[in-house]
Length: 287
Image (cartoon, rainbow, N blue to C red; front, side):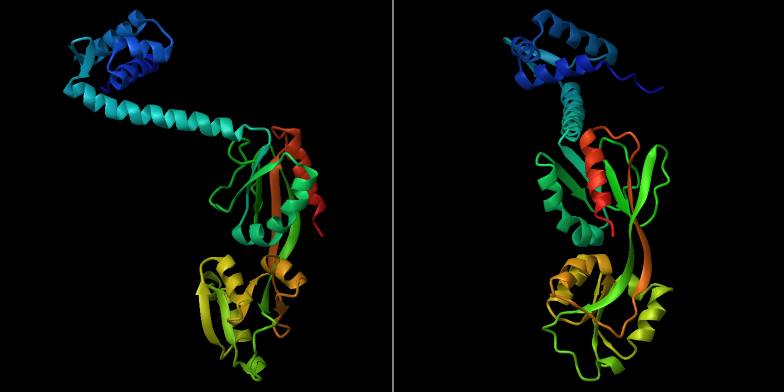
């Protein structure tokens, strides 16, 4: 049968005595009486069935069993403190956590953050590109932007925009005269090149082109295109700002490939009015 977990107060008293080496100083740190600390240690030792301290003069010294227990208790209390601190941080009314695919965060969200923060001066957005997060929980995640609906209870969802794959290149890049006939340099995501649906499309459009880079991160692909390393096939949303600024041009011989909608999801009853305002602002940015 598993050993019952002792009271958290007993474990806190034990850890304080072990850290300070003295019941008096431990009691002062915990803002309780010395007798209360001594009682906690006695109760803990009674439940575990072995002594955890030996008296040395006016101090307390850990036994071997106490040293083993302290290692576990210290880690556990540190983890609890960290969790409580994290919870306190995320419950800050001015923090708002948005989970978003990296290419959408780079190409669509980042260019809009300045206007968003100008409209909400106290806002501190926490932007994560961890796509394994697929829920809104109002503590860790307030808003999810993704390429498929969450279909989560008590969560509202709207389509932000339709995306597509496009081919782009730097205006400074010298395209060979025969590029349209298959003599160019191609950059793309590795997952797209290996895709059973998109792979054949790329092969058809860029037959004979030399591969000059395969990437597992769309942001690196964008950077390679901006550096003029070749024609890059990437999401239009990622290239949006660079295209608008003239830092990239569309490769007109490649017909855009529809990539589907990008969704915005948030709690139907958000934890603050600020989140409602941010959602309304983001939705107003849709085409």
